[in-house]
Length: 267
Image 1: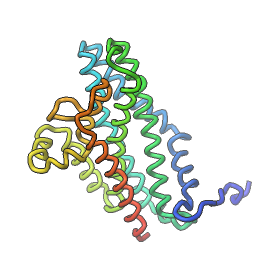
Image 2 (image 1 turned 45 degrees about the vertical axis):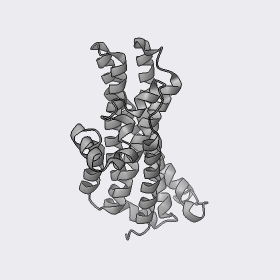
Image 3 (image 1 turned 90 degrees about the horizontal axis):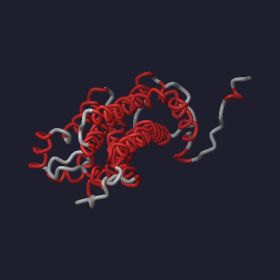
Image 4 (image 1 turned 60 degrees about the horizontal axis):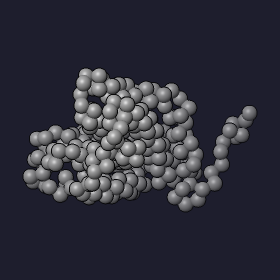
């Protein structure tokens, strides 16, 4: 087979030029290597094994479920931050990005392909798979009368939205900074500020509007006790949907800034 016969022609036009080819390449890195089953195993061990140990340790089932959501709200974003920043910075530092962009490839497509592949990979391996297993774990241990499939799906949707916020934040920062330190530092600082009582209360005192529009209340709410994900899981009414709307807006803004900044990057 000649080299040319292995090439796939670019058929898109405008900002989508090269998107299909780049997305196929990024998807192969997830689903045609060991990466997918390693990710599945990692999240099953970290989340579902932890839930099983809590249930075996005679923790109340509702508290075990809340702990599952809290751990997922911390661990999945950290992994998303690490992989998102490496997907951009790794290719910039190695020169792969400059080589790829010398082909019929729009920079918008480059960023969107990274986002879609990473977002889909985390959705399946870190959200859907452990979420389904956790649902049956909780129902099998006495929470069947309170936990519906729809409510749990909505709760895991908020877990995913929380992870998507930090994924897009890290992607944006990776287009602004050239080193991993600022990207990891800023992203983890934002994450941890909403998960520690001291920093959460400090922000609540001096900039309460940040608490209202950032994703912290989705999986941790030191003010009202239960995070939004726990409330929707149990079918209870939400006191506010502003953090959900705010998180969606931030995700869109981060992607827009990442595309704008990357289109101005010199290689």
